[in-house]
Amino acid sequence: MECVFGMVGKGFALVVADTSAVNSILVHKSNEDKIMVLDSHKLMGASGEAGDRAQFTEYVQKNVALYQYRNGIPLTTKAAANFMRGELATALRKNPYMVNIVLAGFDKDTGPSLYFIDYIATLHKVDKAAFGYGSYFALSMMDRHYHPNMTVDEAIKLAEQCIEEIRSRLVVAPQNFVIKIVDKDGAREHSWRRTTKD
Amino acid sequence: MARYDRAITVFSPDGHLFQVEYALEAVRKGNAAVGVRGTDTIVLGVEKKSTVKLQDSRSVRKIVSLDDHIALACAGLKADARVLINRARIECQSHRLTVEDPVTVEYITRYIAGLQQKYTQSGGVRPFGLSTLIVGFDPYTGVPSLYQTDPSGTFSAWKANATGRNSNSMREFLEKNYKETSGQETIKLAIRALLEVVESGGKNIEVAVMTTEGLRQLEEAEIDAIVAEIEAEKAAAEAAKKAPAKET
Image (cartoon, rainbow over all chains, first blue to last red; front, top):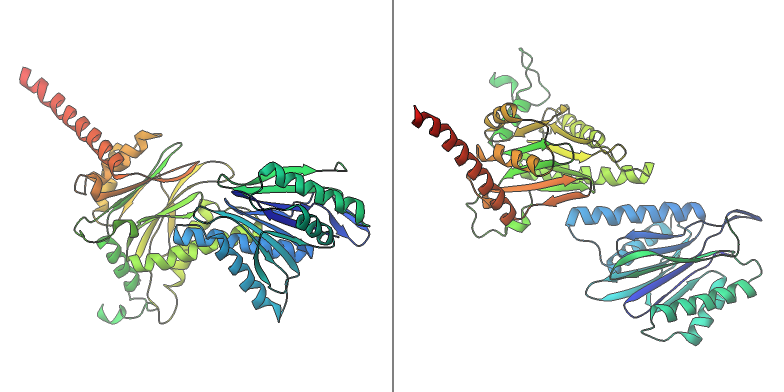
C-alpha cells in the first residue's frame, strides 16, 4: 500500500511519498523517509521491497557522488535517470530490484524535470507520475487539476487533495506523508502531512 | 647491483628493493608539494610549471578532492596519480555505502598506502611512482590531519611535510619555522616554504585550503596578494637587520 507521486511546477518539482514501513499486517514505523536526497538538486522517491529500496537508492547515491568527484561537475537529472534505468535493466534478467522510483531534479540550464522509473526499467520523462495503489487516485486527481507552470502553493494544494483521496478511498491507507521539493535553491524537505504521531 | 634491480620482487643482497628506490627517485624529480597542518586549517601547496603557455591550466588540477572532507596532493608520475586517486575516490564512496559513515583521514591513507605496497610485492608490475600528501578533518572529532605516503607503501602523520623536488630544503625550512598556526598564518607558512624552492608568483604555485567547511582552491590573485605580503615582511626583516648595523 506504498504510495509515491510527484509533479513538475514553475521552476520546481515536487515528490510526495507515504512514510509507512509495513511487514504483512504490522506497521514497523510510520516515519520512514522514502525520498532520498540524491545530491544537492535531485530527489529520488522510491517504493517497493524495503531491502531493495535501501540497497538500490544508496548504491545510486554513492555512484552519483563518485561521478561528481571524478569529473568536477554533478550529473544532470537526465543522466542520473538513465544511469538508474541502466542498472535496473542490467539486474532485471538475473536478480531484479523491486523498486519503483520517481526522480525529480533541477538543472540550471533545463530547469525542473521529473522521471518515472519502474522496477522493470521503464523510463519516462513526465510532468506527473505516481506509483502504488495510491496512484489510481493520485493520477486521476492530477489529471483533473494539474496544469503546467503551477506555483508552489497550487502544487502543494494539489498534493494535499491527492493525499486526501488516498486517505479516504484506499482500504489500508498510509497514515503519514512527506513532501519534498527541489528548485534552483536545492533539494529539501517541505512538510509532512500526519494523521498519527510517531 | 645491476642484477637485482630488474624485477620488483627481487631483494638485493644488502636488503634493498631497487625498483622501489628508483620509484622514489621519480618522486624526487616531480614537482614540489608541501602540506602544513594548523589548528583549524590545513594547507596544501604545489609547484606549477609555467612553461606551458598554450595549455588550459584549468584542466590540470594538482590538488584534488577525494571526498567532501579529504584532499590530496602528490609529487611524481601524474598518470600513476590518476589511477591511485580514482581508486581512493571509489573507496571513499564504498566505505560510505557499507558503513554509512565517511572515511577518516587515516583510513583512506592506509588504503592508498596499502595499494602502493601491493604493487611492490606482485609479479610483472612496477610500483606507483608518486608520494602523496593527504589532508582532512576527522569527520567525528574534527581533528585536522596531514599524512604522507610513498612508493614503498609506508605512511605516517606529519605536522608539516614536503615532497617532490627540493623537498629537503622545504622540510629544513619548515623544521626551522614551524609553529602551531591557524587560518591565514597557516596559509602563509605553506606558501613561504614553497617560495624557498619555487619562482615567486601566483602563477607558479597552486594552493588549496582545507577547513571544516571543505576544500577551497585559492585564486591566482589571492596567492599573489599573500606572496606580496610575505615579500614585504621579508624586506622589513632585512631592513631591520641592516639598520642596527648602520648605527654601530
